[in-house]
Length: 417
Image 1 (cartoon, rainbow, N blue to C red):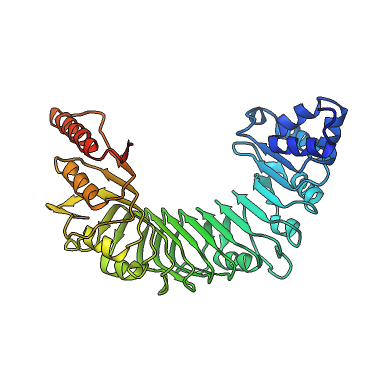
Image 2: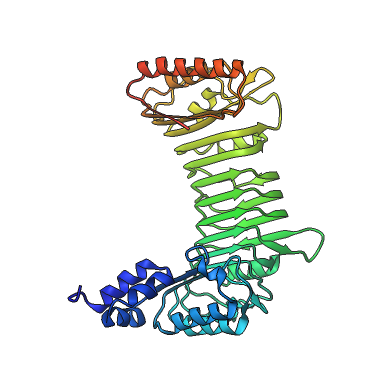
């Protein structure tokens, strides 16, 4: 260990990340202490990593963090995540950020302060590439002054911000590639809440727990879009056909438009969602390169709408991963086995039930026949804790039928969840 260069030791200590562990390790010898002071590039203070933070008085905790940060030089990644900890002094937190901002590339910040600390003003115009803010307020963004010329990843969780400031903040990041919004508190300027975001460099957008009238996203190069647990009247994506991954989970939206050019879509994942099938089908039917399709706990707006396997097989010939949940409503089976077209390229098949009945195993068998090159079968099931005799018998019959089925398909690897 003595022969290791001090820079390598600094790199090793940086992989520890957790500040408490780094401080303990740096006490090993003088060389390790030097590595910690001069060559440490990553440091994390988190109340989850070290529960003792919660037991300390805030002033004592501020002193500990200040001493640790001020002993370093050239920190590139700083994480300060203090959940369930009392408010810090704003002046102390500002001192930490001012000391590190010249070299900082990554900042993960969840600290309650009195008053709020303006992160954009302190860290703007520097080399920050990743900014992850939580439980903070952003007021009055000035894109000409508070620019982030190197920022590629922006995450805002439980952050209070107006629609205009969010628009200006994204505009102030000319290299942004990833945007993550989790339960933001959008300040309302009028009765209708509309968010309009525009970026030519955005590639990945994740939006969770947001309630709006209108969300317009203009991103020519976007490749991945994920909406989760949102309530929207209108969602509109304006792009140039670069979208490859599209995922919706538990979203309520009246008008959904992901653009006309969707030929490059490779993954479509829809769950806990009500679909107006003709419109949605029209939207994705041109995606002939689709590799993965997941329709799980999907409701159809019109009771007469049925999506059968023939439609899926015909429209998506390159499909390799198919996930469907068993759904019988009013005696009609969605994803029925009508037609004869095979899913030649499907190698992974995921099937599941919410309420099992005696027809489920027959449906599984029918799907297996239509996937001649299948390699892996995953069955997702829900079993209630209190089971009636009838439910126990149905489960036993299903188990027996699956054993018999797998004996015929020995080349398929079965999994049950």
